Amino acid sequence: MNKQKMMEKAQRMVSGVINLPTIPAIATRVASLLDNPDVEVEEVAELILTDQVMATRVIKIVNSPLFKPMHEISSLKRALIYLGLHRIREIALTCSIIKAFEGKDGAFDIKTFWQHSFGVGTVSRIIAQRVRYPEVEKAYICGIIHDIGEVFLSNYMQKEFNKIVELIKGTSHCFVDAEALWLGTTHCEIGHCLAKKWNFPNDYCEVIALHHEPAKATLDPMLVAIVNLADLFCSVRHLDYGGREWVSFNLAEEKSWNILQNYSPKLASMDVERFCFELDERVPEIQDLVDSLFEGLAK
Ligand SMILES: [Fe+2]
Ligand SMILES: [Fe+2]
Image (cartoon, helix red, strand yellow):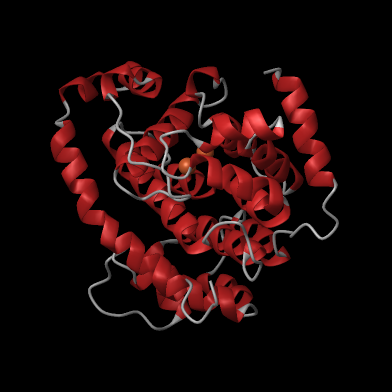
């Protein structure tokens, strides 16, 4: 299908929604505060504390098994020191995205969706470390936001999207193909439009647009390949959404695996089975984290 036409369709869909969520100003303010190399932790803590939901979520994330503190951290300032200021920008953005979309009835269970997203984020981080990608945190956040277009479809195109969910339930078809067929566009183009609207950096936009076609990436092919691979791993390890049938994949045949091998030749000798086992161990941690982030919310 013509990419240009798919992009135009996505743009029409996105601009047709009047009350499109915005990324709360606080995430942008945290990001610009952190652009100052002399920023003090107190200043950042003070700003985040103006948004209690975000402050609570930062504390939940820091205490989750993903960051493994020795003792429970209950103050925001200590959480910021523990995480390091470079991570706060990403966490503030993640919390804002969750917040932007919560409280709406969508076509699929939003908690399962975020479990997939945090799963892909966590696995992206692990792969990034393995291949010595220089910006591990960026890989994590791009993993979390890669499917953001699906939330839009689930919330704002419910009727059409329900049909797609029904069509692929119990089959091995993926959303992206069914969407192209039934909607004339996919969550990749829609996510790309949202990311541009929210002024996400260009390399984030590229991951969202091309995470199912990693060979087309030009800005940061390694980053797109990392997220693509993490997405595949999560799909076969039941960190997926939409009730699709279990799918399998052959690593050696994946384009993203070849792309990563070009950057990190050592990958060829990686014990894939052991890697999958490591990943399995992280699944309950990710489910716990998402459970705690959504505690007290209806969905
Ligand atoms: Fe996707
Ligand atoms: Fe995905």
